[in-house]
Image (cartoon, rainbow, N blue to C red):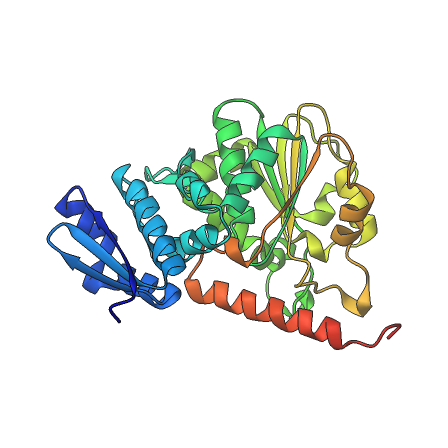
Length: 329
């Protein structure tokens, strides 16, 4: 034990020290477990011991987390794990970029920020391109960030309206079996979009804009035959579009509009083994100027940390299944 490598760091204030360690030292306990190092506190000093490489990594992570706390941000288990992952990959300097830029402010005053580098690349793609495809698993903020950017564009008068749409594809439940008229039947499919809009602007403001025609939430079929000018248009759950639907949607774009297409290619609910229009579009439009493509992964999941673990487990399972599949099978 005496041969263990040690490093000591000093924390500037008690408040930073307490925020870094977390309730019942849960933050530091997580770093201990993830990196396999011993971490002890005495006064305003933190001592780390263990394998030299792991100790240096722990020191680096703690130092960067202190930097995040010093600028008034909070840290949680998901962010700590992400910081460890970045540092382990040699990207410790990029930990400082997490949660740095404010994208939007909700009607409750909450700041919307990118929580991962993947999210930041996605937002940059939206800023720099007229059309953007965002592909990634559930919980990576694809829809929410797009809606946040759309609300900002509407407030800044960069566009005159926001249009949100989804294909009404059944995932185990038939539309015909649901009660009510057509609008009531499709509302369950559009509910995540209503929720995100309500969170960003408040339901009262949403209702006013909806009545004025400045916000529209509708099934994809309602887009046919239209030209969408001066609009921020978001197609959600695009993995469930057919090739024909995707082409129809993309050709709706009018002047001074921006299109964001989001989807998860691992959750395709199209019947009869039909090929996803999203997968085809990613192949066909690759390299086309002014079309951006952002890929998010389990690293970018910002929901409950268990969601990240679930997505990661499924990705591993799918890769193993792909390796076991016979060639030509």
